[in-house]
Image (cartoon, rainbow, N blue to C red; front, top):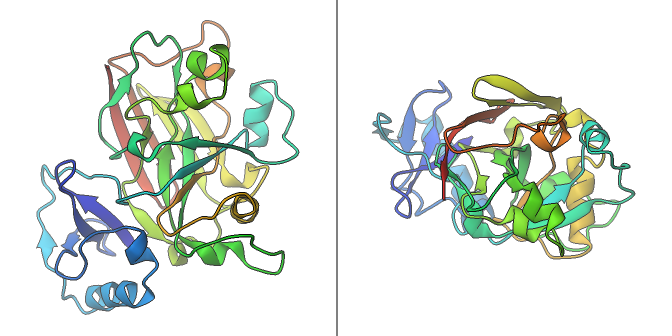
Length: 286
């Protein structure tokens, strides 16, 4: 299923994208929202699936309807850095021996087509298309004989916007360059795991002002999705509704020759992950 949330910011309603790929169906008669509680409730998900198959869900008029983040009340956004061989190479870094883990605050998450704000005094705002993993079952200390993918509810597109000067040149951890407002567009859909049989076989692309900048595949991940989920569960408990951003392929502005083409107000960024939809953001000054 392709689950989404539509409406004005803070007042989104749950919806489903029909198998035809064009018709939106209203889920508000069945569930209050799309969140961790829903993803952990197999019976509720089964009711949605049955109602969709029976044609019982009312249609929603999509014209002019904003698409919000596909997940409400996100607990935490865990991010994996330098997780593609080609991206590590373009930044001059060695492939890490263990996953590089950092966080984004949940309030950085916005809709897939919402405005992205370039921070005040920013000189190096950068783009990163990523596969996001959405947790559906509580995962803690996963053992080697457990299947980490069975804890995944679904997948989405994540745009891990980053300010490189704040991240790298201003001291401390990466947090300052990762947590600016609007720095994590998510969606348009939460695609349930049954529709993504192999998360290591997805293409990722990103364009800036119509020019292709990133063109990669999750097959190039240093630590695949299953290993990332298992690894993270050793250091923190993952709860339904938590999100993991799994890294970005080569092609970011930081990895390009001088003068590096960092983002500015007026730029337009578009990105897609195979089977998970497409995003588009206009950039404006904060």
